[in-house]
Image (cartoon, rainbow, N blue to C red):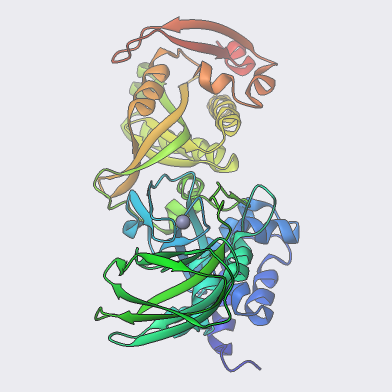
Length: 486
Ligand SMILES: [Zn+2]
């Protein structure tokens, strides 16, 4: 048995995970196999989408599996800020609340704006109380492992160049020397220079240098002496001839630094990397299980964090006043609650999440516009079924949808969305009449939406919405259930 695994804790936590919900057969045992038999890298920053793809599981169940595994204490959540150009993990946080809306990659010396749907990846690492792995203590890793396995994304989250090469492997290949720099000490890095230039870089600060390689080759050892300072090296570089080079670098700071030296061709240029699919923060925030299990997860960044594309759905209930009067407030409230359950079921089944309820109204968010439209149709059908049970059309639902960019913020201690997309979605909802769905052209033109609506009567129109300068094109949908009941 592996001494690094706390067998008893693992068994107990697996039992809790098994009981957390109904799982498809072998789902929990697949995770158990990973924890027991995977190497350290296999249980570090696990990508739930890749985990699902490799095991033929639905992605949504894999995401749920890791969320519940985190809730019971088997795993911890790792929010990673990825550099689009170098697959560097610029920041790694245990919680969304630590994620800011701007970040800086030291390897690329570039600033980025963090957005929930592009370079914020959510991954999962085995909890240290369950199994100890080297990555729980990154400062204790050998310098090269720290660089290529910790600071650069590993096998779960590979970023590839347009030629299909994995960036992390390239970094390992071109980096001829890497060393920690204890404070006040001088490290000596021996490299051989051939052509192009030597790039010195740090992953944790902007300290770096460029040494050009030129002239005739030499058999004499050449020495370059540099100072490692806060955020820079002095001098910033130099020139050597092809041959053996010793770089002597003195850490003049009070903290341990790191320096890596790579030989790169003169025409080296960074390019946008293509990451394999990962769980974006945007998708996680529209996952109901996340919102149910991690209510304390909020955005601390004061300006919020942007999301490029999200589909928002608003509903409202037009209750029959006479009906309410007849059945009384308490019964009416119970009925409204039952209607909320139907809306929630429809939302969760389509992979979305309820953001909030406002009186009788609901705001829900989805990653995929066609899922949102599918949920809207399911909601109408669900409420009509409720009405059939009651024997009269007591509850009348009106739905509106819009998609676009928004800002995720924390309002009243819970995650919410803010911006014009939210306003438009709410106002489009207000156009809808009994049993109707109104969607903006942006939603209708999204993949799969027209096909979903093909069986229904769809009319196009435009409206001038309050607070919106131009006419807003919309589509009005009258599902058959609603027409029949009217
Ligand atoms: Zn970078």
